[in-house]
Length: 121
Image (cartoon, rainbow, N blue to C red; front, side, top):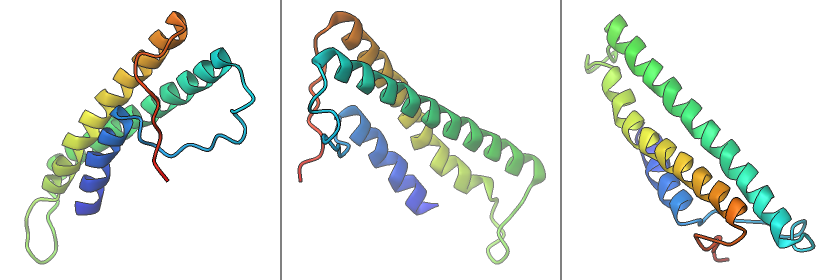
């Protein structure tokens, strides 16, 4: 669960700073508007995936609380682990939705609102 916690903490940061690695082989020849549309579609799909993950984690918390499941040796409730991961996953989902809305606004405005830096290699 510690690894999942770290992934969701840094995934949100990477999402809001546009720090994901990009491969520009196919998009360098596209017009600016086509790139914006493509980026908007990717952001929307990513936001949907992040929200789906957060919803499923919430369902996992509810299920573990209802069942009263505990760990084998230490006998502490399993839902504690799910809550620890759910909090940054929910924040990351909110960030994903925010970034999708920003990219939609960028596409409609025809100009960047947030710079796209990508990962530095």
